[in-house]
Image 1 (cartoon, rainbow, N blue to C red):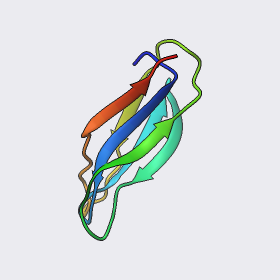
Image 2 (image 1 turned 60 degrees about the vertical axis):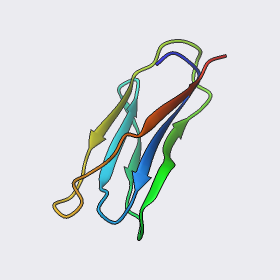
Image 3 (image 1 turned 45 degrees about the vertical axis):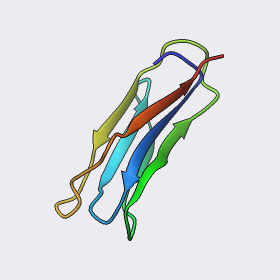
Image 4 (image 1 turned 60 degrees about the horizontal axis):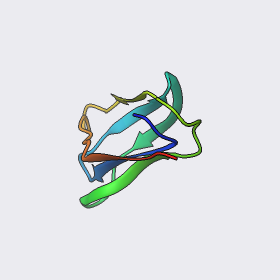
Length: 80
């Protein structure tokens, strides 16, 4: 993406798993999408204040045997 801010929009729920989020090939956060009930279109991760320009966002599934699923509903970016 090109910009200074990015957000990953996902669904949280009882069968959603975990993910590792990388920005520019650096692990910046581990995200757990578990919730007791379904919660669609939530911000799962956000990075702000990045240097203006092109960046790489990578989401790697790190689920468990009982919660192997993650969703990518949308991405939101901001350019300045």
